[in-house]
Every structure is written in C-alpha cells, then in structure tokens.
Amino acid sequence: MGIVNKQAEFHEFLITRLEELLLANGLGKSESVLIIATLETEIREAYGCDRHYIPAPSKANRNREIVQLARQTDPRLTRPEIAQRLGVSEATVNRVLRGRAKPLRRGLGSADWEL
Image (cartoon, rainbow, N blue to C red):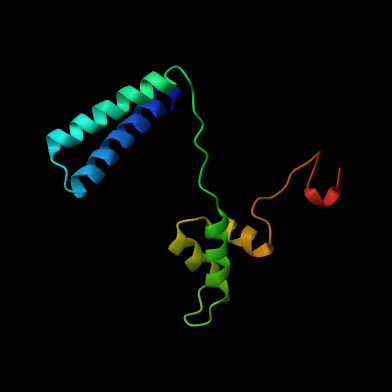
C-alpha cells in the first residue's frame, strides 16, 4: 500500500474515531462536525507538509501477558492457546518465553556461528 493510501486511511480513522468519541460524550452531530473541522484546520496549518512517524505501541505489556499466561496453572494453557488468545503467532510466544523479544541477526549465518 502506498504512502498516500496509508495517509488517507489514517486521516479517515482519526476523523471517524474523533466523531464517535464526541457523539458518545454528548455532543450533537453539528457540534462534532464543527470541532473536527476546526481541529483539522489547526493541524494542517501547524504541521502541513510534514511527515510524522507514529511508533507502534510497546510490546512490553504483551510480552508480560504471554509470560503470565504461560506460568498460570489453572487453567494450564498451551503455547498455541496463548498465541490464539493474544492474537499473535506461536513463534512470537516461543521467542518471548525463550527470553528474546526478537531474534538478533548480525553478520553471516545463524546467530550460533557468531560471524
């Protein structure tokens, strides 16, 4: 997916979610539209032509949850069950439980070769 599509999807997500929050907190449709339009204009004036990186959320909480689920005894969950419950791959569960969030790769060959 190209940058333009991602930016358009992100913009649509922000506008839609902001409208949902405003309506859920008691503002009417017309007030919500006015607030969104004002905010959008201010953001474009302040940050227009800039590209902004939004980092993914930290995986520390997810990793702690994987470890907690693996340690619990009642009910005892298998690694595939943990992966399914958290919406991650079984390989991710295995990496976390081995103590490495991501495998490190430096040089040639496998990590065991130390090249």
